[in-house]
Length: 554
Ligand SMILES: [Zn+2]
Ligand SMILES: [Zn+2]
Image (cartoon, rainbow, N blue to C red; front, side, top):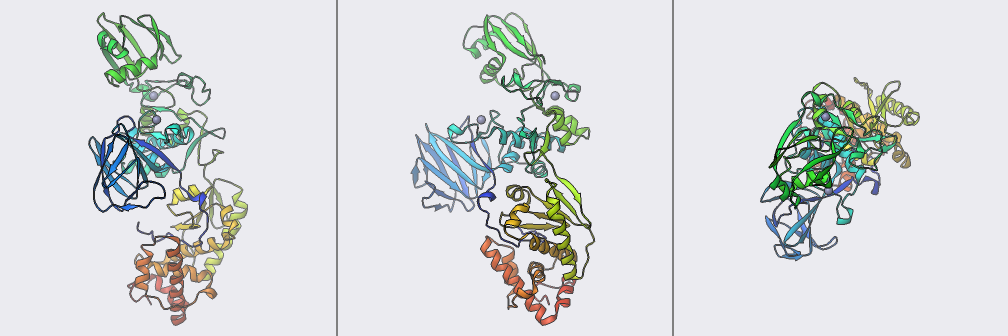
């Protein structure tokens, strides 16, 4: 990854457990496991248990199931773990990249593949599976919040089988490998956002189209009494009702149900008009079982919903219906129309999940902008302002005094409620206390910074960066930007040192870990202190916006 020029790293925190990104375990090809796959490594390795020695892969490798063992080159074991970047390809699916861990097991000559995915990547893959044809970006964002909330709310649906979610509509349909830039953008724009009802995560059911009538949640889950999943009209999708009709011969129906079918009559409907129970040759059956039996045997495009009228034509039955799916929660067809009419994703979510609120924390609170004297604060917790606003004002004055410069744009300090959300939203590792992008400083939770007594110094450093970036030119080297910010924070403590700045510059572009970063930043400060000793601070400061090469910066 190319380091963003304005992204700054300084105070290193030891927060390990809290910095873990939320991940989910997804069983790939749940319904149709492959017998073999091809792995094309890009830095990946194989091992046969958590702590076993790793075999680094140097070229493509076929992995196949042999009864209940996995054969991968010279390795044959009951489980094989693939770690690191690799491309997975095979018959009947689009190739996709894996970066975390892929656990490979075998059963009955079939490969069972369980992929570890960061939550946000999982949501992107779900959007690709469930909403790839969406035209409205706001509808896509609404789906991102719904899909993310669904995953977090329902948690590990397949825990007993050793993973969290399957890759079908049983959980959420998932497509790896072709994630579109629009799906990625919708996920990024709503990063970490969940849907809440009275402080609890909402059960965000969704479906393809309701045919104009949203169904009550109890039609799906009899025990689910939630006010936000009530029956109501969908004035949006009804304008282009998703109508369908299906003809099914009684012999096909008999085959699908596994017994002779002579008559089919509707026995009960819900308030929304959906069929609940049927009498099939005088035997009672739920509409869901009926639809699933037909779907499995004759295809899912026959009975697309339970919202239909049936007609007996002697040797065959005709079904005329509307909508697709169970009709509970968000109607994707209606969401699309709302988005195309200029409604925001929050409005879309509020329409389909009545009385809920979008938020990144349990209170359902969202970002709030609180104005200070010379800067603004973005927070999810108003209480932050009492500590943060005065500290930020002080730090800004400090940075202005040190440089003698002023800011053109009003700064914004954005403080994240948790380290995990900070990490997910900024892409920074958890040991980076803050980063600055343009006029926005993005901070870890105040409690984390207070615990390490680094709130004031972190803010001071970030404001110095903001000032430095406002003066710097695109070609201004990173070492000078970073070194100046560290040097100006505390000029007395920077020891002048002779540094090969070309080599340092290259290192700064490929930092791998915290240790390398600390060493590189010390070198930046040393190089700047050396330049100040030789040329004076004013010359060094004015060198920021004078065009010059990295080779002889001063
Ligand atoms: Zn599932
Ligand atoms: Zn609808």
